[in-house]
Image: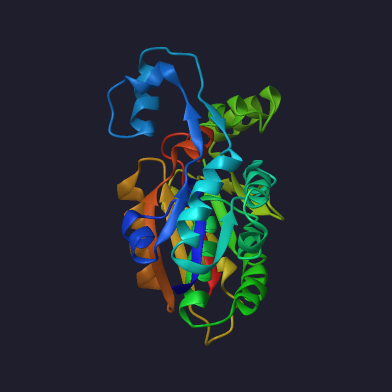
Length: 291
């Protein structure tokens, strides 16, 4: 039996090859949007664009996983691993972390002692980096106490920045008011666009960018500024996610690897559906942590 297994939600945006390589169990976070399910498109973002063209006014609804969803994955991992860490998306965004905690209570007492839960305080690429850190620490042969201690410290310092093309999706999710959405849209038309970040598990403004149409360069500059004070011997692991703008995401990857020494892009992936219906098409985000 292997030592430590990992469980996380689909909101971590990890590519399939990484999931399979690290034997990560994925709990799906659910999206309900009947009006767009039958529309043409290879992913939800393409369907969202088609919905706009057709004048569909509805918005998708999300629901957190149930305790049973976690319980199923716990049991799967417990059959293969001595202990299991569940890395959940920020409890400030969703009740998923609470569901994960509840699920543990349905296990036998001796099994409960083998499950360890942690709030990643982030989502998407940031959550994915936290999961990879857990897998890395486990792969080093450290015991569960050492892994949890280092992981809790790591999640405090993971950086995540996102820039959006259209704020109506954020408004529809209830995360900003109608007035705030109107103001943001007017700012965007005049060339001003806010950059958003996650602090202490919450999505908050991180400043206003002028002439911010080039999302890859805006996020590259933020990365460069953010790691300016890092220790010289520290490598930087980076995740890039996007709302169906693969060319832009690849551009960000290229300039980051070319112009910043010690940067490793550990994955580049499409934003998951649940975060995607909040961020909207063409959104782009970058997350990083010191290794």
